[in-house]
Length: 265
Image (tube, rainbow, N blue to C red):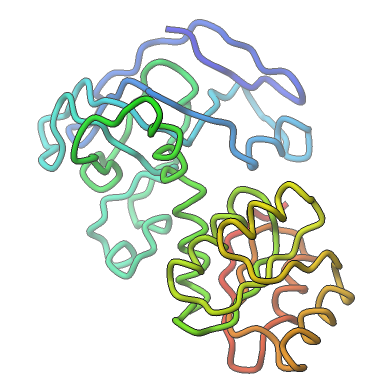
């Protein structure tokens, strides 16, 4: 099969790779229906993060189960499944409290930008849909592989509650879906920090009630102004820089919570 491989800064090649096979009895092999480029893929692509060796690309994926290891029990061949960028057993102590990305047996899933993908720990990593989805629905389901789950986790970690005031630092895919997650959790006021007009519109469509374009100390001052000098109950940090983290912490009221999901860079 052919797949995307990153060789170095701005050097992506579509080349022949071996078809994945079942290696462990807990593995599955799926046929990819859709995959995409994650914001975290851009750091090695731009040269900000070094690439030590040619690396198959892609960790956001969904598709149809082709093969199963003998120990896999919860999914079946032919099912449409959505998988996570970290494989997890979903049974260890960390998984049981909702931190599957910190599973004691976790494995990073990569190489999804190809026709086939081996997924370790399939029982804990893959979630089957009730039916095979339509082509139109597949792009939306793909967001559940990474960015929607990450945005939801940020809101959950930040203790978003019905009626609360939430600020979201970052207007990329994760930040925007953090806005949507906060809305679904019942937040009354959602402040999106964004300088991009098209993303501001999406944020408002997803439930943002206020837009703050300032950054750094000015951004913090604006959030304090909007919250009568108190700060937000919950702040979602969805960027990963030192500046964004300090902005998130400084925008949080005393006793508030920060959900940190930005990839450090």
